[in-house]
Length: 236
Ligand code: UDP
Image 1 (cartoon, rainbow, N blue to C red):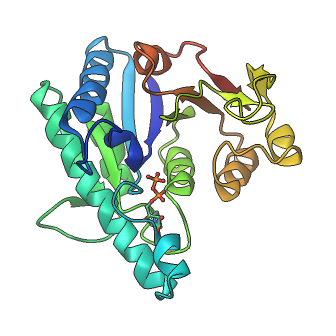
Image 2: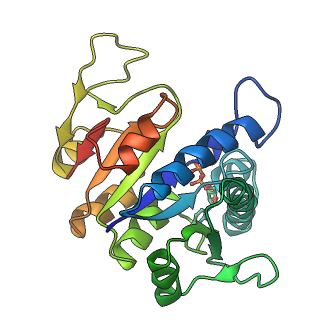
């Protein structure tokens, strides 16, 4: 069994062709790929979903809000996304459990590591909501931290901006930029490559947790990444 954590940003649930915060067609696409990948067997999948399509703590803080309060709003946004994803994945026949880092018993199970692992062993997709429950983080760090906690072998970070991995510079601004197939954490840190939040990168490095960055929306890519294929860039 391969146990993996998939990090989906909240914006991956939205679509430029729709005014909706959560675009049903996009969510259904992701759910189809996830359910089909689990159907093949050999995969235990936990998903950490962000909330940037709804709210980011930093946005409120910049406008003068209390940062911790603003971050709570962001964490609640991730719960909304988790429920949308749960609904979509279950409509494709794959059981899921949403586990929240903030207690809200009528909405989601509380996060308990042993229970999360049990769900995974039973073939359920576990969706981690509310990040780590602490302000001053984005969901990149809980993706890495939960992965270490449940002993996942890798963090898969799906991007949605049309960039299929890590490049030497932003390929949209610099067409000459080259793509890395494999990269070390030290190179990411030294070159200040914006792969994930620095806190998350440092955590992955300290805990020898590999990270694969890939384009979520390229047809077939999510399925390939979940199957363990070498799509995008591996950071290790
Ligand atoms: N957040 C937080 N603690 C966490 C995870 C998330 O405070 O452990 C808040 C933070 O304000 C963040 C927001 O939730 O901006 C939404 O998460 P994120 O920005 O990671 O969403 P994404 O960019 O992945 O859509």
